[in-house]
Amino acid sequence: MAAHRKPKHSPLGGRAARTAATLALTSAATATVFEGAGHATPRPTPAQVKAQVDRLYEEAEVATEKYNGAKERADRARAAFDRLRDEAARRTDRLNRSREALGAFAAAQYRSGGLDPAIQLALTSDPDQYLERAARAEKAGDRQAAAVASVRRELAAVRQLRSESESRLRELKAHEAELRQQKTAVQGKLEAARTLLARLTAQERARYEAAVAAGGHGGHGGGSGGAARADRASTVRGPIAAPTARAAEAIAFARAQIGKPYVWGATGPSAYDCSGLTQASWRAAGVSLPRTTYTQINAGRRVSRSELAPGDLVFFYSGISHVGLYIGGGQMIHAPRPGAPVRVAPIDEMPFAGATRVG
Image (tube, rainbow, N blue to C red; front, side):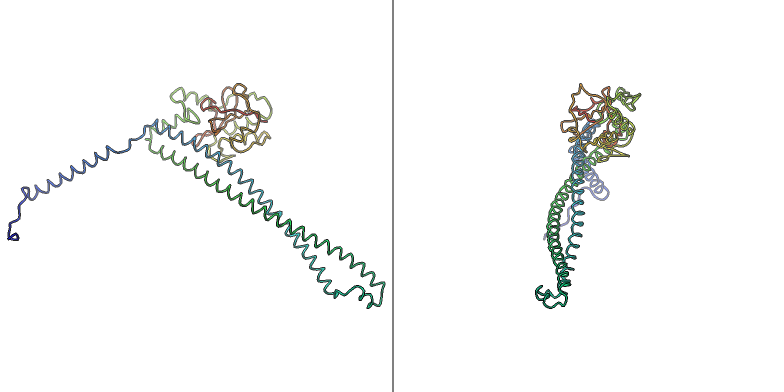
């Protein structure tokens, strides 16, 4: 009986039914859009982006100095390994020559038959000739003993050098692993900063770049006053009265680098990071500084902020992650960060951590 029942008709048929379905789908889609919008992550303001980017650049600089330290240690380990390897090769050559000499003596002894000296005297027809040969044989025996001793010495030296080389190689690999880790950390921080900056509009990005240009390292400051300060600090006008000839040479070198780009891990001549610039500046004055900020701060005599003189190294942040070259008048020359070239800036734009006098 159920099979013969007439199907119920929809009150909306044909075009009306299709219209109703379309409206229903549209309403559902609209509701979904508004629901998604209600849960979307709010877009950060330009000020928030700037604060996050500044923090990432500061963290990248910390990682850069750790990278510089790891590279310095890896370079030393590689140089030591190369020296040991070369010395092992030279010792191996000497060992092989000593072995050859010992082998030649053994071959000569074998050819002579190794007869007892009394028998050889009994068989010879010329005792004087025999005694002469015996004297030579005794000398040869002394040479043989010396050759054996030489082989033993060289063999022990080669074994020691190979053992030290293996130890240095393990050390080198550990430093290279640390180097890769710090490189990844730096690149990750810089990429995160680039991603954040890409979220800004062109106008917001321009304002951000202007703020960085005005404020230097951390982008502090801004507005017309900050821009004017950046303009005043963009060049060093007039001579700088340095306390020593070496300090004057270091400052002259740093002045010549103004405008060159910041590149993490760079030590010149076309680009620098902060400690690379100070190291190169003092190297030009004949003073060798270590590579990193946290080793440069211990490379000379500590001085207070009130004692600062041109040529002093000035350090910033609690982790001693940034350094500049003081030039007097509350200013320094430094390599700020990616996107900000070597420039003159006031030392009060970053948290002051200490100063060191070298040279």
